Amino acid sequence: MRAVVLISGRGSNLQALLAAERARDLGGDIVGVISSRADAPGLHHAGQAGCPAAIVDASKCADRSAFDAELAMQIDACEPDLILLAGFMRILTDGFVQRYQRRLLNVHPSLLPALRGLHTHRRALADGHTVHGCTVHAVTPELDGGPLILQAEVPVYPDDTEARLAARVLRQEHRIFPHVVRWFADGRLQLEPDRVLLDGRALERPIRVTAEEPLPE
Image 1: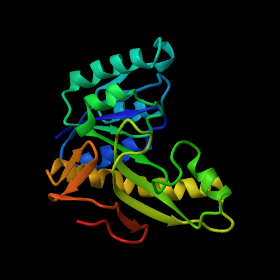
Image 2: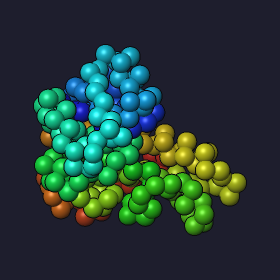
Image 3: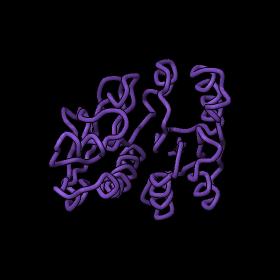
Image 4: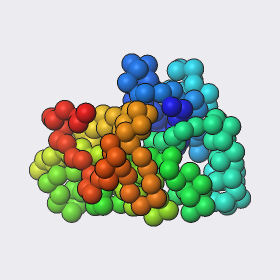
């Protein structure tokens, strides 16, 4: 299994994926990292791991279509089986998503379908949530709206700050994202336009674990 990782920032999920690859827990190889920003710290992690990296600078593209066309060219050069959105802060065009629809996974910092979009930890606190978490899901043209696969929940404490809550959620992102990638690499997970199948059965709802529970086999 050949995977390409798309990033825009610090690349902490990329680090988790690279660590799983080194431990032979990913089920395949990360063959490329592509950043939408030239100054993304995550590019340093790719370099340390000896992973080929490229930059498609969104600020230098005329529009979303031009950005997606350049991004697709870089992706196709890597010949990936799977494309992983790991803190990739770009809204992709419908045509791009449809082109790679059965090969796209994203990790999102909320228990989808709640809190789609940005600033999820801040919104969880403002809305009085007592449980928060993260989700790995298939990508569709609808923002954060693709079929849900695996979720990890964390408690929200009365004295939580946005930073403390974000850190707890991030630890769970690092745990569940490589796990779902391994399911795909092992042929257990199939991504379809409107559903996902695990071991040949459609997931009617996401699998959810707490921070203390082991991940499902």
